[in-house]
Length: 150
Image 1 (tube, rainbow, N blue to C red):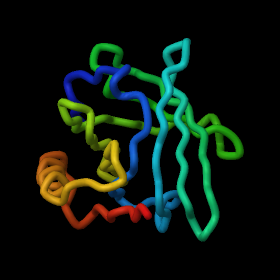
Image 2: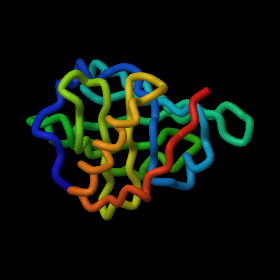
Image 3: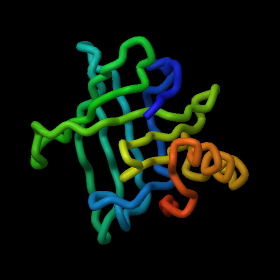
Image 4: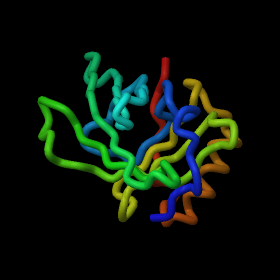
């Protein structure tokens, strides 16, 4: 899966709100979902996922490792305990706004996908434009489900 040509990793850091997902076991049914990305001194990225699922706050700690240092757009993600820490998952930044206001992360075979925004609400026209762009990666518009933020 082709990624964006370059991600300014410093600008990328911070909080991103999950706007929509291709439903997956962990995030399906979650609300108020967000990720916080923090650059570690060793170049890895500390990722904290927060959401509410089944009426309870849920938090998952992860570690991202950039595998393409030229683009900074191709990572692997490891979940920390209590999950299986030796499993690594691909994380491919396939769209990013020039102003780092929104982005999309792709997954091989389009089994998962994320549309994220710096705010809890994304303009509907921007969202529709992103969905059209994601079709170029083999996603279909109806794969994505919006995440409620309240």
